[in-house]
Amino acid sequence: MKNLLEVFEKLNTLYQNKRDGFEKSIQHFRAKKIDELYLQCSQLLSDADRLVQELKTEFLVTAEGRTHDAVLKAKITELKKIYKQLVTLTKSNLRQWVEAIVVALALALVLRNFVFGLYHVPTGSAEPNILVGDRLWGNKMVYFFSPVKRGDLVIFDNPTFAYDHSSEAKRLWQKYIGIPVPLLGLGVGPDNWVKRVIAVPGDTIEGRMEDEKTAIYVNGKKLDEPYVNTYPLIAVRRTKGFIPFSSLGPIATPSFLKTETKICHYTYDPSKPFDKQPFYYMDAQDVIREHGSNDPELQVPRTPCFDYRHMVNMDVFGPYTIPANKYWVMGDSRKNSIDSRWWLFLDDKLIHGRASVVLYSVDSEEAFWLFDLLKHPIDFWTKHVRYNRFFTWLNGWNGR
Image (tube, rainbow, N blue to C red; front, side):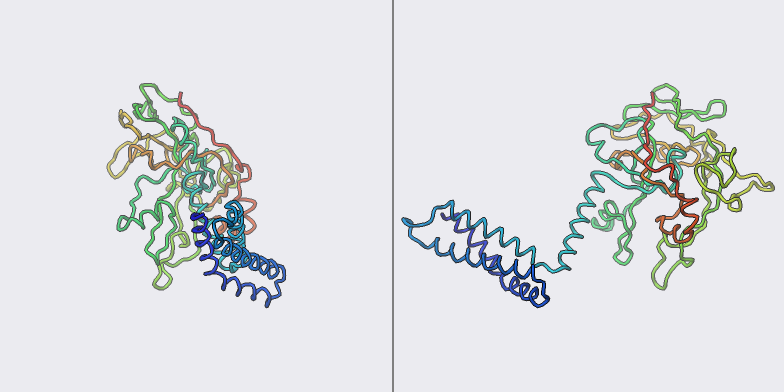
């Protein structure tokens, strides 16, 4: 009896605090001639008032004649249900929209960080298996149930990214949101990279040159790597962005909007003309030529990559034994990839999940393909959209 009375008193306090608001909303519905809501809420308010009076009376009767606890409990449950209905029906449209947006954003944040992710590929380090402009579906659940394996195409945070440690809030914003808000001092998050796992914890890896070609050994065995890019890379000029100014008054132009001409190195099939390339559409006038020649500037596959600052062949390394919770990862396009050869081991804490499917693909250097659609409304559909890559599964390789 005492517990039921406490529950009723708390519920009645909530109801009485909001009753005037319910009345105002009902009168608003009447004034705006929203008849259905007016009639429904009027009836609910009347039912609530009736239940409150009945419960007050029944809790005051003598112990000998009081109503059975089951009946009291049923009426309290009904009052609670009516109260919740009134709260929902009398919310303003603005409040309903705000609540819906907050819930949607919270759900999206959870799904994005712990279940699956949609990723835009900004570089060609995994060509020709993954191209610049591919939109990937990443499986984030897979590594909760099984370990990372050799051959997996893993998605991870740029391991060289420097977080803003001036406050924990700013660091967490970069890690989990990543959208820059300069006016609030919130910086951009790390880029997401895709590389292939070549060696796992406990493996020994070594890079050698054999007959002037690169070779990888894992646990003393030379790898046959069918996934490595066998096409040359061609240098092409590409322009991205809209705004040709570095700032708009006191506000710096965001990098994704600023006009920039960049030199891109794309996978190139020498047997096909520029405008018929299978991976990227190329305009002959944008192709960079060898000095003093009309031949395109090419990088030959399976030749070494050099760190010219230190004059080091980056394909000769090790042997290294991979520590616990670390991995050795490399791009499939070795001539166009900054990977473990430069920064050594990838920490498993940076791994988001496994790249599973190319959902769709747009040949574009823009952060948002909508920019290319606006700039090239006709060519976009005929030259930029790679229809043949839609819903392409990305298969791993077990390295054995």
